[in-house]
Length: 335
Image (cartoon, rainbow, N blue to C red; front, top):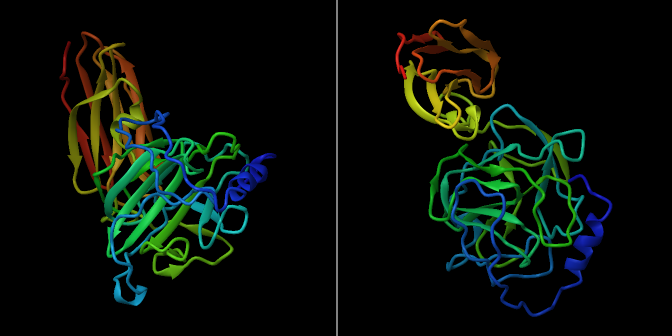
């Protein structure tokens, strides 16, 4: 975590609440959400730390040796390198990790956060004044295992959703309890059972225990043919665009044609399905009838595009390439 000038003070105030009786907070409106329905603010928590303990699901705590450990990966897209630090925050109780990768305080804000393992979202809410988690996503992985993703700028999953490993669940941010002025980072932790804080476990990524207290790692999450691209065509093209057509590029990717009815623009994006996070030749193009073709072609880790052009009342030709597969449409989608 990169600390701002008042971060330590904000956390110290939280630590000073140790032993206080938790009062049920009022519901707080969620902020900067991406099409999610916020759950109610949690009321069962330990106010000693930055991310007080939201209510655990009713379960009997079992010795770790009796439970199968999920195959956790880094909570970031394949190929990205992030530095984790478990000792920079005065609020950490055990094996929690704060992740950053940029060279400046706000460099990581808005970066994609993905699920470290498959599971069910049991919390997707802004914790408001309840604790210091801010926008929090908690995923239940079964067998008593859960993972926490805190301080998110936005959340892209809702409570009750089933998520796959590598699926986008939000973006890096600096949301927290009012008065906690923190720089953007991802607070990540893994828990087993319900006895807090002893249930916080050492993080394991790609089968190897994190090198506490500080280590820089490259994510393997979503690498290879079995991974999930953390981006969508709508995210690539931007607000207001909707998919109106698509074509498979073998098993290597999909090229999408989108349209924005508010401004009359089309957009093309090619999203990879394989070699995610590794730069490989990828292309997206859009040609409005009677105008010069616009192309984005290069070596990309996740997608080519966006390629946009005004096309109201015009026919368009569109297509792309990923791997060895190419798609070229005829002039179509006129009007």
